[in-house]
Image (cartoon, rainbow, N blue to C red):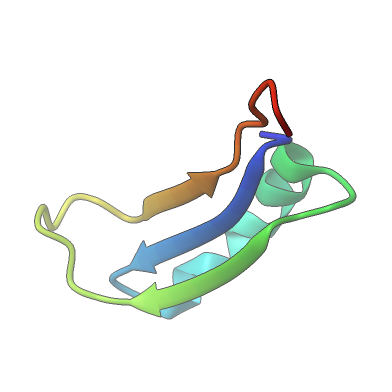
Length: 62
């Protein structure tokens, strides 16, 4: 998780995002990545959230 630099959250109901905060704080710690929350219809109506992450893994030359 330390290499995650961006997160996009997709939710069918934007109001469902608030309960996620404690979990996200625990997962990302004191330095959370840049984030966007988008309200969108998900392919499976049973899904409550979809999370997309972008990470930067340092290479040997970084």
